[in-house]
Image (cartoon, rainbow, N blue to C red; front, side, top):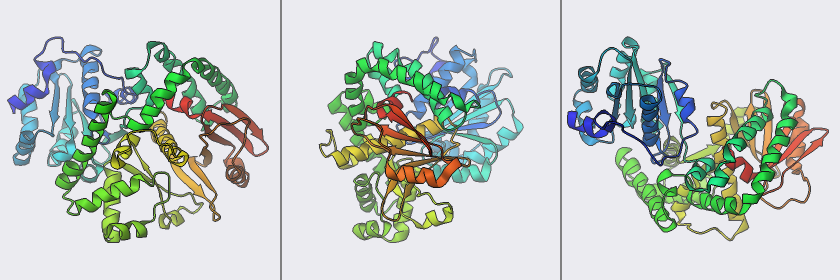
Length: 480
């Protein structure tokens, strides 16, 4: 145990241990807000999105900004097979080791990385959590299949969950963009956050939304000087996604890293860890789904094409969702029980992973393909807004009429609904989609604001049924 521990905890043996060249993650201050509370913190997310690096950044903050003794910080990565074997033989071995190494009676911070690989430890962890209030536990997990089961059985009511996604566009720019562009990002973030919070009614003084909108518009005009650089970076982001290990590489190398992430996911995380037997069909499913982003998926047709049973297909889709690769979006009905029987829309949580599944390495020339990618990116941004700004308090749906009319996203907060439509095209004047107009009229007071995501057009239109804000996608992705 000692040899493994020394390798995994360099801050204990290296005076002045430092971290450099890392992008600050949007979620970090949200997690640190809970660092002094008793609850167990769980950081979930796909492999390679930066959970381990985030833990190291939190440890760095504890040591260098909060004065925690490095010898009272314990990090264990269960990616290490020998450590897993030790826990399998004796779940208490890690805690016995902590007691031996602990200095004094100060609070101890214990980090368990990839906890789903050592579920045996959860029952012992519960005992220590209940009896040692000076033990603070922070865990990460890449699959909620085993993690949710273990937590629901052992740690129910003791956990605060956080979702870490791949890099936001702003996080990516902090690594790659020019210093002159980066200096505008904090201001843009503040203005966009104020506008979005007002848009969904989080601010008490709701009438200030137009004031926030005008401030946001001023920042957008400042960024016009950098639009060429922003577009180059955005097109790369659309293709390569936001896996940290990908965006730090040169173009040809990033493609290899993406393919490797996809291959390791299928061969190790899925086939080996989850014991998937029909792995060829699973790989085929990933490819088929990659061609259907932003579209309704027909489960019967997918099952026939893959020659697998309906139950196997449902299991595969569940695995893809629980390992944070895809999300299936439900349709909106006033009676949500009807939605369970309807087809869902498919989105990948990282467009780079999606593109690696079909070998897409250059920007597509087909406008429909670009539209689907942009819609997927918009979904990703909205999910990150919900996680990092609204503490997962918002629900997402799509809306489809019987004659095929569609609203890309419905954002639901309490009794209020906000339609969002992606129209990544050149606008000359405000044009409200007919389906959105009819939906807002039908909903009345519960739906008074809508948003149209554009390429580079920013405006606002007041109607008798509500207010429609036209927001450039670049502004939305830049501010998160």
